[in-house]
Image 1: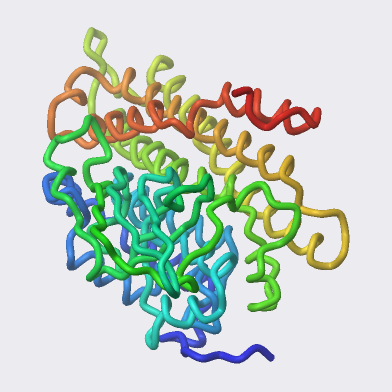
Image 2: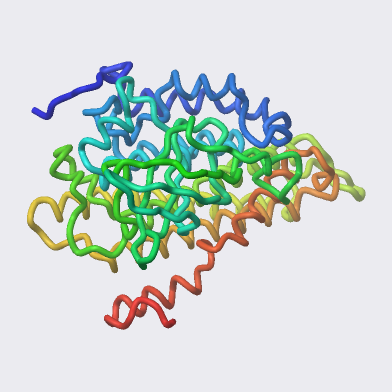
Amino acid sequence: MRTQEVPAPEPGLTPEAIIARARALIPAIRDQQDEAEQLGHHTADLDRQFVAAGFYRILQPRRFGGYEFDLPTFWRVMLAISAGDPGTGWAATLGSHHALVVGAWFPEAGQREIFGPTGDFRGPHRAPPMGTATPVDGGYMVSGTWDYCSGAAHSTHFIGNSLVAGTAERIAAVFPRDKITVLDDWGGGATLGMNSSSSNSIRVDEVFVPAHWTAPADMTHGPDPAPGVRLHGNPMYCGRIYAVYHAGLVIPVIGAARAALEDYEQIIKTRLTYFPPQIPRYTHPDYQRAYGQAVGLTDAAEAILLRVGEQYMELARRWDSGGEPFSREDDVRMFAMVQHAGQLAAKAVEVIFAAAGSSSAKRGTRLQRYHRDVSMYYGHIAAQHLTTAAELARVHFDLPDTLF
């Protein structure tokens, strides 16, 4: 039996119950869409409900106040939040799935302090090394500014990658909330979409980070499981995070597709066709085709995503039991699968938006917002599936992992 240093708020909470809580909150999440888009983040009241529901503790180690459920459970909760509002889902997912990373890669002493005496943790992680870490006695002095720190508004911590001064070494450093500055550069139409994702920039000015609050930044290429497997006795903390990170971007796109389908069904069930003989739109083949195509695309996207979550758990258990390692190629293959799930869900939103009629393009309509939100995914560097296709081939054929 592993030591439980910080009890979870609800020791008897089950995966089924926490998923049901998320689905029950969809109407409340939708009700705050307009306000969240202007604020740049979901409302404080809604975040208090997320905290009370336990959403941020799903992947957190049980030892330090989490529920330590599995990836499919976490992803189902985040899919429900994203169906309420894709931007809010983006913030919640990327603000909380890094508990898995802390549990996997950070030293035991660091985890004890980072998760703290109550286990209250949520923090974005920005992977590009936009900071500089200068070695000092006991740790590093870190400065830098990181953009696109999704989930910043309601975070308790921030994880930023930095270059160690005078070297090529990269580290991931954790900062508590009172040591960072969240810049006012998100929301209110600052970007085309995902305005409610709280993807603000974060600045750090000469902050001391103890060495045990840091970990090596290269978390995707190593041949061995992360130390969190031994620390927590759970192979989920094996540290293979490449596909997991991208799933955090695709979940809101699938949520957008689910939400768009609901709006489209309401439209075609309540409106008539334009030209005589006017009939209910849902009875016309043109609208039936669009609806059926979008359902198939969305269902396929979600099935791929959840299969990847199951496969992650299976590969981690196999590796831990002495079987074939959970390889870098396995991780890249799952990353590619998740990318294609994102493409399918984004296509579903496009199909619906095109078939719904020009009134859905008006500012303030939900379908217009979902279309804008999905457009942000297309431009994300991690969504470029042809780049990953080439990477996968290089890994498979044991070629250099980069061309340059």
